[in-house]
Amino acid sequence: MKQRETSSTRGWIVLLALYLPIALTGCQHVPSFNIAGSFFPDWILCSIGGLLAGPLAHALFVRLKLDREIQPPILVYPCIVLSCTITLWLLLFS
Image (cartoon, rainbow, N blue to C red; front, side, top):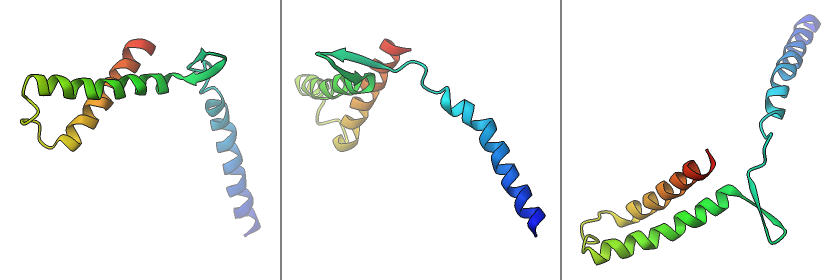
């Protein structure tokens, strides 16, 4: 029984030794902006842009009288915000 526990422990140590360097090299570049002395992550700025695009899309749909055609709006508008956020991230940071 002692041999089995030692082998299992040794396996976990080998697994940790193999995967620890991979985990530590994940963030070589910190994606952030310095705004007024504070560092903001890039995703916050992209999400703000996406959140601003949602009401703009709604205003555009109302102006074009397409707002009645959007069903269900509770799903469509968050998807618009998410797609604008991801598009901003891809355009600016990749």
